Amino acid sequence: MPDVHGFAHDRFMAVRKLFEDNIAGGEDIGASFCATVNGETVVDLWGGYADPAKTRPWNKDTIVNVYSTTKTMTALTALLLADRGLIDFDAPVARYWPEFAANGKANIKVSHLMSHSAGLSGWKETITKEDIYDWGKATSLLAAQAPFWEPGTAPGYHALTQGYLVGEVIRRVTGKSVGTVFREEIAKPLGADFWIGLPASEDDRVAELLAPPPGDAVGDGPAMSELTRNMATNPGIDVSETKTRAWRGAEIPAAGGTGNARSIAQIHAILANDGVAQGRRFLSVAGVRKALEPQVEGTDLVMGVKAKFGLGFGLPGGLLPLPNPNAMFWGGYGGSLAIIDMDAKLSMGYAMNRMLGTTTGDLRGIGLAFAMWEALRS
Image (cartoon, rainbow, N blue to C red; front, side, top):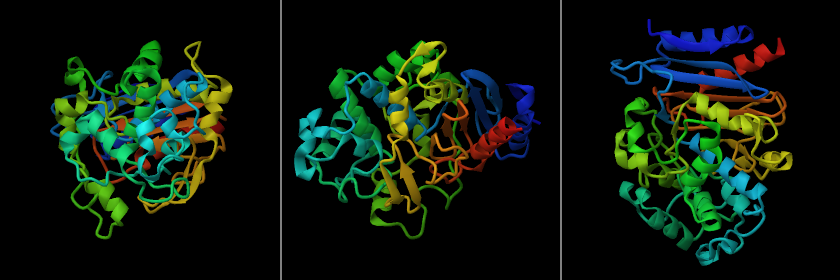
């Protein structure tokens, strides 16, 4: 049986048992789960193997590509800058990025970018995987194109484009890339092992992802809408690309982040605790609560499911039922997950290498989260 390491406070032993069962039963090859309550780490677990061949153990410092859980880090970076007065979510994007006003986009707000309602869920031009490593090309194409639908009227998951859109606003107001701002202002002060743009020096710690089974992957559905097809096939999602230095080193702020459950929970303790983590204030209370303001709700035009978005996060009443009203979440392709519950002062992270077909978390991470809530109620 593969080993599970770390700790869970006595109150949360049921969480540890569930994590162990997931590893032992093969639901996970290797994984990590971490939770903080009132800023204190109460669960920090890791175990299994870092590769599908089971030749490398999943260690305490193992990290992995978490796909769209990266969006939560980009959103937090934008919230921090907004709290400092550098970004106004109600302002038109073109205030910061004048070229963006082209093709009828002059009135698109930054809040539309944050809430997947800007109508820019993909590129109209055909692009290649190499193009997503070219920040200038990826952003200039988005700035030039017309939206797919009337901005602000409906959600439509901006699976890859959101990171470039929000990231370019961040770059315009700071003069630095989103990965640099995130590292300097959030990750480094917390000592959190999460990267948007991974240095080559860290490559030997990265776990290898196992893609979803054939037929379950994004883009394998038999009847996709044109918007879904565009998202899934232009340029297409190739999980093996995450093994490359090009992917790991690039700043892909919607999907390319590398970290583990510990770093996810550590960082989002900021949001769970009214802007304070490790004794340091990162955001004001109002700046944190801004994320909870509902922006758009309805059937997502890309995912085809009910969605409710605040500023950068999914809210209760959307894809995931959350037990407390002041809670929010997002997850990544394959199963990774970040959950923040401001009512319980709880932050949770889950990262793994056996991918399922889900784009926003699955029952492994969600099950662990609900075991946490159950323990807190007992």
